[in-house]
Image 1 (cartoon, rainbow, N blue to C red):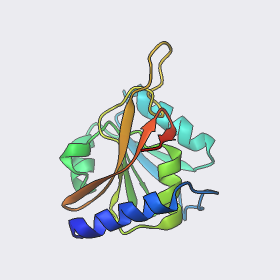
Image 2: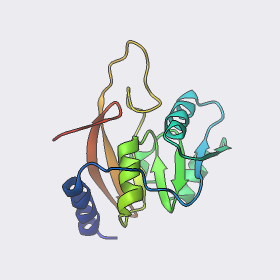
Image 3: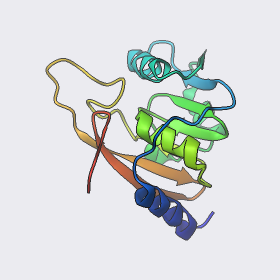
Length: 156
């Protein structure tokens, strides 16, 4: 996929804006995580509360998972998930996940790089959320999709 086509996919998301109902995934979401990571469990609880079926695969070989699923180094986070042919990296908020499942863009996946404070699963009492970007990615291309504060999309 060219950089132009991923930019086109991102523009379509921005144009269409908010999404209504969640598109029903065809199967369970598989979440790969380190067994000792607590924030991964917080994100899993967040997604499960929205009605997603989750299969957890604990592994101490997260690097190998990310390489196999072709997650770009620039967007790596703590956990990686697969659902309906898409890869989710890190603390992806529901509005972005729902948009991908409904609109089915030709991208490899979505990512929230690092572990931004206040992102789903990274909430902590007394810690102010920080803005972060959800990034569309495919082999060789990355494009910011939306900016979030906590689990809320921010207007640009």
